[in-house]
Image 1 (cartoon, one colour):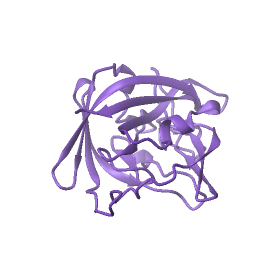
Image 2 (image 1 turned 30 degrees about the vertical axis):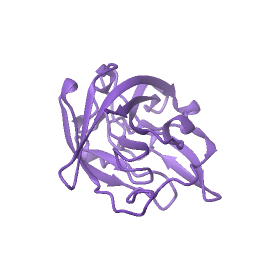
Image 3 (image 1 turned 135 degrees about the vertical axis):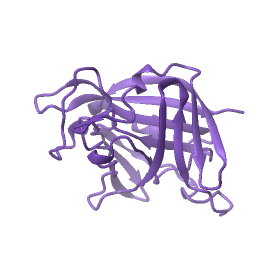
Length: 217
């Protein structure tokens, strides 16, 4: 289940980045009616976060700084935890919240198109449920990732960007590190997000699990 609500200030306007993994990712506080239960810790990917200024001078997600087109990511693979998923594109909903994979597609992760494609300068963001009402989901074992683990992201041109995990952290959705996850950087980095932690009174996970990785040389 997913359910982060990140506020990011872009071009002078507030964009609500609510990562709500619908489904039993435990809907992570999405309040969509897709909330589920779990017998073991599951992860979610969003949470309330303070508003921050969006990176300035960041290339549009589909193009390089020179304006060249960048192939969209199509698949993410994490050998150490048995993840192999195609990637759907996630944009913003009409209310400004970040789209998340539908509950009935819990085994499919999504790339947030509001940030660079994996392998390009800046923070690429991939979101996935850890469980949904339909059962275990794509990032069910994300909490098992350790520093040094490999993450491969294949793109539409057939190329593969290979990342190495540099760290993980579990954070309260009420204190989501928006700048650390979405903020501008010249490094070619990747963030994976899902739900984590105990449940609140409404059955939503209270934390988010974030995996940080950087492009291998």
